[in-house]
Structure formats: structure tokens, C-alpha cells
Image (cartoon, rainbow, N blue to C red; front, side, top):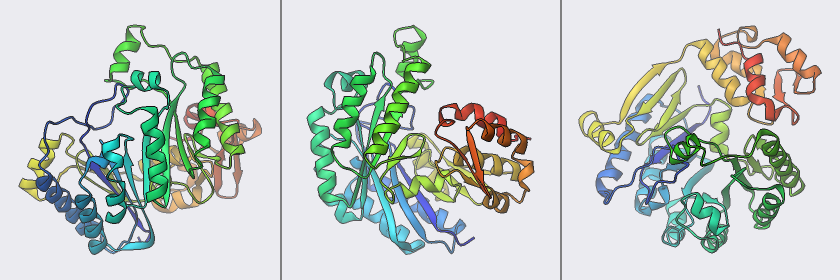
Amino acid sequence: MTEPLALYVHWPFCVSKCPYCDFNSHVRESVDQAVWRDALLADLRHEATLLPGRRVSSIFFGGGTPSLMPPATVAAVIAEAAALWGLTDDCEITLEANPNSVEVAAFADLAVAGVNRVSIGVQSFDPQVLEFLGRAHSGDEARRAIAAAQAHFRRASFDLIYARPGQGLADWERELADALGFGTGHLSLYQLTIEPGTRFATLAAKGELVLPDGDAAADLFDATQAMTRAAGLPRYEVSNHARPGEESRHNLTYWRYGDYAGVGPGAHGRRLAQATERHKKPENFITAVERNGHGLKVETDLPPHERATEAMLMGLRLTEGIDLARIEVRSGLARDAFVDADAVARLAGQGLMQQTGDRLSVTDDGILLLDSILSEVVRTG
């Protein structure tokens, strides 16, 4: 296997926990930076022994809040990855950041460390919405952070959350127009969802938090597609929009079912026919690294059919869809083992899917019905 490799590095610490967040994030009074740098590098070396002969095409520092990492630690991880594998000439190195002033102040040093793309968790510019979402920054800080990112990095993206309680179509159109006005090459636009185990889930269960109904959410989604397309940032994945060539290469590796190494607490990875998972709790991760030289908790062999269906479920989120021939090669299965051709033909006749040769995709009319479409076309066994 000579395809390039993606690398995910998880930094688990945050200043506070947002009420909608179900990511592996933790609040700690203090962090021993030297211990964490050494642990991440050890974890990285372990993965390199199991994935030799590959070059890294993207590195993604996620979290948590990786912009709280010392730039020296970021630089050390990048340098170690380059020494262990080698980086492609156009390697995309992304770091997630919050718009808080203290984090933005590190942008210049992070750029020197090797980061060339930043993804900012703006979520909203409205102060009341930011308070509702539990965000620690202001709208003005968000605007300054985007400007700083554009000044320091070759590429910048930011996130917004919409389809919030009480949000009307006109409100969202104004907010999205404001966001598009910054001229970044990439936007991630997520409809608010209620994740189990979050504070929002507790409020929703009590009837104290009610999201827009299906029709209203669909109207918001349709308006999003029209406005981003008109601005030259069409949807390339359900929630992600980019100027052609500005797509997140790292996330495309996930959606195209490529291989990626995952290091750091709770990080997931995929090595050919194996899935990996690190210890999730920070303290358990450190203990495992000190004991074993790595933070690996679970290695799971992925049967051929599971690999094929996962590739279908991930790839059909993309506007480009999936390459059935590639899935056959990666899984060792003929396509009729994982695709219901009759269902595809029926849905194509309804204008919800399209197939050209080996390329199968969901149309714009079908994307809001994606879950239903997947249940019909993906053969699970």
C-alpha cells in the first residue's frame, strides 16, 4: 500500500466544556507540558513501526483545544512525523483553534512551527447565541481571529452552528452572508444536533430545548446550499463547503476511506484492515504510554464486509460520491456484496442518486434523505 497517510493528533484539554460537545475534551487545572510532549512523540513512534513506507499527506491537530498546545510541542510532533515517515511536498497541517485572544496570540508561533491551515471554532458572531452555546469568546474576538488566521496561515476555515432553537431563515441568511464576507476558502456549517450525554441532551429531555422541525431545518439547509454555491464555496460534504482546491485534504482521507494514524487520548486510526483506538481519559493514556511505550487501547481487525460498508457510509456523504472499484480493491469483495443495485436504480430513477461507471453519488435532491438512502443501498450482511 503506497497511498499517502494522514495523521491525527488529539490534544484533549479545554478551558471549559461546551454544552453541545460530546468530543473527548477535559478540563484540568494544570498540564505537565513536558510529559505530554514526550507521550505524544512516543505514541507517534509506535504507529510508525506499524505503518512503514508511507509518506504523510496531512496532519490534523484536533481536540479538545489544540491551540492551547505550546507551539514547541506542535513543532516537535511535525518534525517527528517528518523524520519517521516523510511529508509530501504539499502536506496540509491543520490546527483547530478557538477565537479567544490568548489563543490567537499564538498564531504567529504556530505558523513558524509548521502549521499552514487553521480551523476556527467560531460557531456564531451573535453574543446571545455564543452564551447559549457556552462559548468563551465574543463576536468581535471571532472576527479578529479570522483576520489573524488569514494573515498568518496560507489557508483558513471556520465553523458555524445553525438550525438553533428559535432561529429563523432570515436570521440565518444574514449570519451566513456575514460569514461569507470574510472570503475564507472553506466553511464548516453544522446544524445543531443533540448528542447523548451532553447538557443540551438533558435540557431537550426536559422539553427546555427544542430544535427547528424537519421542514424548517430543510429550508435552512437549502438556503445554505444556494448561498454558498453562489459565493463559490459549494458543498463537497454534507456540512462542508469549499472553493475548489480548498477542501480539507485530511477529512477527505476519512471520507474516502484512506488510512490514517491516530495518536493521543481517544484518537482513532485505520491501518489497512485494522481499526485502532487510544485510551480516552488523559491520565489513562499517560499511564499506558509509560507502561507500554504507546497509548493504544484496542486494535480491531475489520472484516471485508465491514470495510466495504464503512467506505459506503462515509463516501456517500461526499458530493463526489464513491468509487465502487476502489472499494472492491480495498475490501476484496465484489460490489454486489455491499451494494443493492436494484435500490440504486430505483433511487436514481427518483432523482436521488446517480451512477456513472464506477462512480456512485447522492444528488442534491437526495442529500437530506441520506440516512434513508444509505439504509436502502448499503448491504449490511
